[in-house]
Length: 496
Ligand code: UN1
Image 1: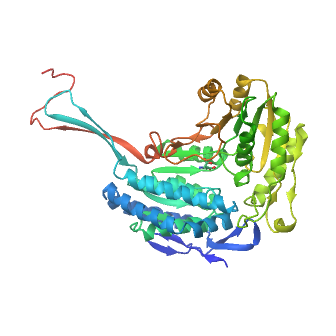
Image 2 (image 1 turned 135 degrees about the vertical axis):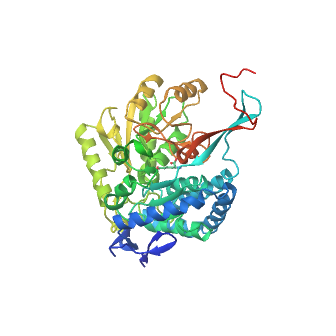
Image 3 (image 1 turned 60 degrees about the horizontal axis):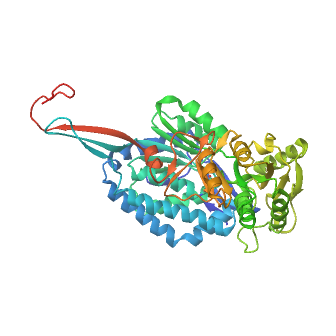
């Protein structure tokens, strides 16, 4: 049954002014309409931004620990409803149920963490060079944020953005992907139920063209946080210009290095999980595996055998290992890349085709695909595919492997399998990515440390927790000097 979803503007659940709607479709079964959502336009955005602007004046003055209490309550509600929300993620986005539940868990983790930040949000107090004067730096909110999120983590990524934005005292206008609007609506409903005052969160559904771009460039928006493709992110940053904060989490072409001394069983598990988990639709997906020549054939043989056993299907079934692609356009893009790989002369070892039979007949499925003998400069080894396609590349030694890993325009995540501590330290030092894993796959970042990448993978601030994480995105620094001497004191001049 399709659910009727609305926008949230100034505390009211409303249709788009135009009355137009869009459908959200289950990618594993295109006959299943998950939701009917407003197809909003400029007028809806204007109203939402106005509401957020008004609410900002009071929300910024609510003590951060109080803001944290509301977020804590939302964490509890998310936790109670985890199963139902996880099933919805799987139905609307396609990832298998354990991953749908993981998506929700990531939002829960972020909610507890950011609720706690309400009692930390610390700055510095330092001594003044003058008597009877003190100095401190404090974090202050930025204002009204536009949050634009993708479909691949429909609960986690909105939570990564919304919760830190709110704990810092900003108000938001949230534009989720039009492919996963129901998951986003649920998250917002929970925040409202937890006690978010009206106007603090505004939700506007619609397409990137109708809503996203207009929202990001709206004159009353102070900051933009976007996750999606590098193309769209860079364009947004360009059109937003220098007058507002823009942070973008973008593409990846992440690699696993497998050294000759690595534990091959573990490396195969990591490559399967990183390459085919979430059907390869993670910005952290392992789409390249760079293997030492001494173990190349053995690794390839083991990797292929395990990949051949993966079962495609509806992610709600226990028998499914790999779910569908999100939509037809994404499916076509992945199939095009497979053709490009073949033309470039890479050796197609398994997969390479759409699956249209049995449990796959009604959805967007592609067989797990492995290319071997891939040259580092081939397009399939350079460009983000965002699907179940892994390129296996042969390497001579560690330095060559690191050169290959770094030889792409992206720099999000990487990994090395080795038992040699010296090699692992060199990899950790010389690989230019925002995240490096040792003896683990390229996916599965935890929320208590910054998330994001170098080069074309990120722009602006990193997300999530820890020093250098999302608090930097959602606050600016203010320095306060307080002179209680009752006379004019001159810094740098009065020497006492
Ligand atoms: C993404 O793919 O956009 O590290 C985010 C991971 C997840 C987040 C992925 N925790 O794979």
